Length: 323
Image 1 (cartoon, rainbow, N blue to C red):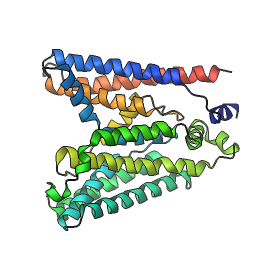
Image 2: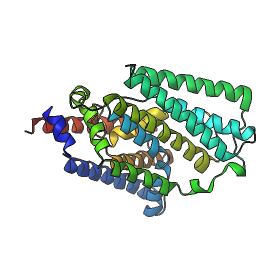
Image 3: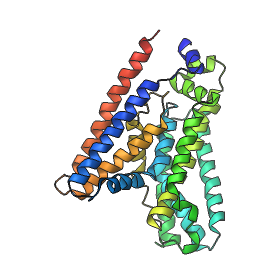
Image 4: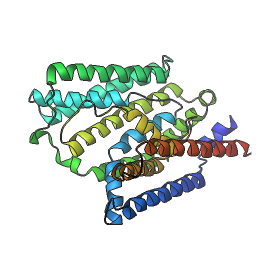
């Protein structure tokens, strides 16, 4: 009870966040330096900017994954949401509907799915891993079935479906990070972290724990949709319903490398952004340097997750020992 009340009074782990961010930034510099000296890029600055550009579409979904994990839940539905969102955009284009009508309809539908998931988990007590994994398989299979029988493999977007504001993807992502950073100074955020640390104790503190646990799934569904749209409109210029395959593991790994605790109660948006850059930096390095086996990519990511999990565990024990 004391720990929860202390948290609601605004205690912060600024030193931990700063040191974690510094470690990630150093790893980014090292990885991009290896790309530069290995001849992947002729100049260091373009190498660094390419890594940032490649990471941007994954940042919203990774922020959503971290947000859900900080409430001590897991969302594995990203692959299905990615594929289903892409399919809906293609269906609206083929029916010659306005792109804004398509975006609004897809937004409402994905938000409704996020609400159903969050309600089932927070109010009905359904296990989040089982529910979101099943939803991901269902939406993924449904997307491929409809794509084969209705869309029939038409992937490219027309000029009328290419929106100009998606050309400013950097601004979109930075505003998103700023939103989460400012959200941390609100009372709602302290309640969210309290529920993630100890839901029973938070309930004894008269917090509306069910509503608080519902919100991450709503926001996560919107952020997943945003990542899907960024990949669809900004990067590919077309749509493939298979784009989301395996994306749930990528964004969860980025969130964990960014310092999100699987036990709940901690979430740092800036470090997740740095983790996404590190992820894409190393992926670029392995892709272009033939001397590095592709398996080394998975080894490196797995090693990072293990190392940061031990660091996170040590930090949690240190906080619990504090009076």
